[in-house]
Length: 296
Image (cartoon, rainbow, N blue to C red; front, side, top):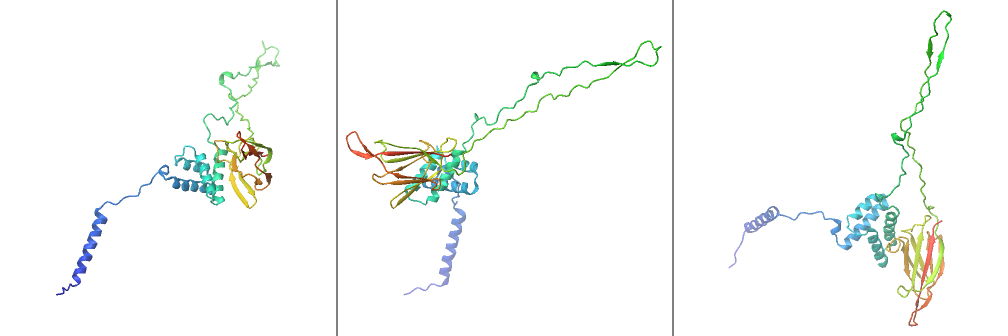
């Protein structure tokens, strides 16, 4: 025996579903979105946030805002965090443009450090206190006697002519001494000032590069391009601040000749081959090369 159900059965189910949905939507409290601090982000999300800060600085050039945004990540050393992220990007063969964006921010942060209360950037004003002021010397008033035409006058009547006192300001106007700010030659290519080889079994086969600007300060954020047969790699200074902001290194392979370019190819060093060193037990290992550059 079959039971026939009319359309009221479906209509009743529809009403029950709508009522249950309304009850859930209005009766059960929903979770509300909460803004979280950047310091609480996961490590990979911090990297994305840090890159967005560097990209925003590239567009706006507002270093103060970029510094404040980096501080919200809570990194103990923001410069070191930028360097480590750039090294990870280089190891992952990410686009060199992304690494260059991080390098530009790192260079700006190191070239314009935060001013400290002990910094003296303004020379003292040359002012004097009221006690140091000497009053102007008072000159005696000259007296001119003018005789009258009447000789019977008992005595001449003297007339005095006042000489005005010289005017002198109580406080002299302070004059600021102009300061000279030395700046490196913009766009000048780096010149090689020292090239040497050394043996270090703890760090074998390293090409170590040190860059200094015209003031003798480490030059951070400089792009270096090293090439060899069928190979090329880019790396930057300023990512190993524990050594020097102007330091960068590259791992050399034995018996391979390299060429290093910097200053957008205007400076090029060729014939770089790791020397052969011998350990204490007589085993050979690749030595290291040190290159030092300075901007004129």
